[in-house]
Image (cartoon, rainbow, N blue to C red; front, top):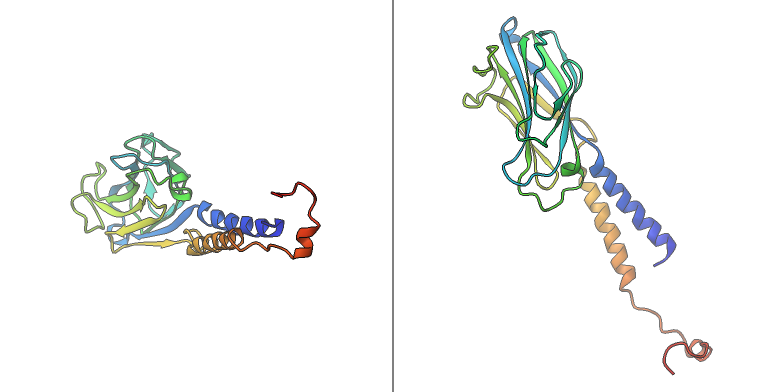
Amino acid sequence: MSFHLSLLIGSFLGVGQLAWASPITYTVTVDTFSISGMAGSLDFNFNPGPLETQSASLQILDFTSNGALAGNCPCGTGDVSGQLPATLTFDNLAGFNDYFDDFTFGATISFNLSLYGPALSTPDGLSTSGSRFVFSIFSDTAGTVPALTTDTTDGFAFTVDVNLDGTTTVANSSAQTTIAPVGGSTPEPAGWAEMAVAIGLWLMFRFRPRSRGTRADQEVRPTGWGRE
């Protein structure tokens, strides 16, 4: 295979890898006007599934609100670091990874949710469970009375699942909550297309018929080239 073809295929594969290496980011906005002034609580957790789960991480970034965090920390349990309104970082290495804080609600809450790590960039094909991020809102400081959600059993406002193929799935149980992917952050299908083109090019050049050369070419071969 020629140097130029190798370089072309390498470029295609490199772009495909980059498409999957970027974090998957969502912007989240919650309209809390209907419970403004209420003393409640917020809960964030990111946990592995019950079976073999590949490593993944997430961050809560750019948290803003006109409500008031109580700051009764340490609030984290498991693989959690940071404290709101600064960045929170979660890993899924422990069975339960949770951040809980008392909160007096204002009109809105907003933050960015960024997911990254091997489970999203390079799925191993061996794991049998994904991971799940959960955000919950409660109208009491004990975290027992769900608010702004139709999920009265678990109190989830929304969840984001990290699937075994590296994609994510959002489930929203709150009419007051908007979750939107940040442009360019989700895995691009084009990455797969570019990889398929690269493999096709390699196969085409790998198995193309080889020229046998002219009789004159064969007659001037050096002695000992192949069988006599």
